[in-house]
Image 1 (cartoon, rainbow, N blue to C red):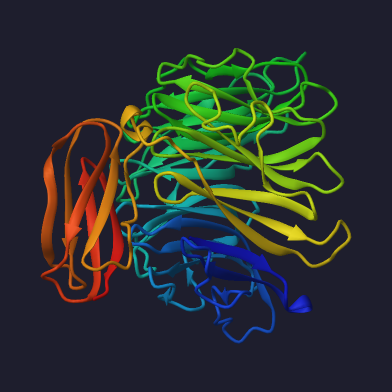
Image 2: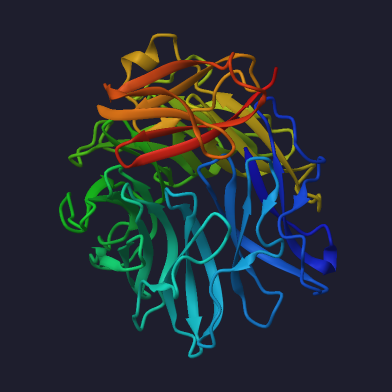
Length: 514
């Protein structure tokens, strides 16, 4: 797992980005305080790097984009860390776009392009300080693949970018908030692999304000969206959702379907893939006393499978904020949040099966379980899947409320499925899992998941990209598949294995050590 953070260890020297790599045992690749992500500051005295976004590169490493204001205007820069934990390309970070018509570039994100590179999108201030959204496609070496960026928006409004996802045909879908205060709408656009905007429209233009959109790829070229919605003046904020196909068709009713409507605020929706649709998780102030965590299971047709007002993930006494979620290969929902039931806030979470029940007794119904004890000031959890049936949680920690030094902690949480559950459940997404053991000699096992029947090819390659052997090349049913690889006849070294299934492609690295 790669972790990148903003770090002001230089004090008045500014904020720099640092990174660390953890293996499955939690052992760091570098010293406990990490390594600088862009060590070349190009002769400037002060670091000014922040507002970062990460995405995998498809070969075991990751891309990171960030704002950098070492010069007069903020510029978006890109760095790649390869599978060996080494910085690939420009050690100062590659400037994604630089022209005389741009002032500040801010609030960037990146998402893999399915071909070893990535898409980058950002808010762009012109010289008159109007804000529009641009996108650029970058290759594995951090070089621009388009001669000029794609201009996603051109409006008199301030278009606030939120996030985006790669589509199954190697395009990118971007979502943002647009409009005037009091009448914000949610808009989305698709940028093709050659830089053309193929569709652009308002996902929701209902009355009053909509904001804080979330997005999730549907693995068929389209995307799911969810957002906070204040279309009913008597209410505070509700949660709505929409499903848009690859060609830009709204698959649910215009302006979205209702996820939850209750008193006071339902806010900050998060999305995770479910076996037949999506999970929507949000922070909920319906009690009028404290923020709780709720969730809903929305099917592909836009129906609610869990209780109409949502399923409480945690309604214990005390406050909780900043929920983050993901799902495992069997479609179980995992969520983690900042939880203050005691004097200090700790980190709590839960893992639920698609029927809404905890996957094991550790996760107490409507309460969750403790991921980190409330023995210090802890906040801002982040969640990412690791392999098929585990999740990494990373968060900030200090010794107390007024302790000026913040550190970072991480924990690996298994979803603890029974032995027969992966076969009994249909995975919610394509995934190629890390082989185990790794390093290996000479036997190892490779697992991959298919959300629906597909022709799948699993092959092994050497460092020069030559195909060593084909482990599978046939039509397979939906489910979790496992293949054994015997490397008795091969020399020690680094090898890659790649899964191709329809438009999906993913590559991982393994080490044969004899």
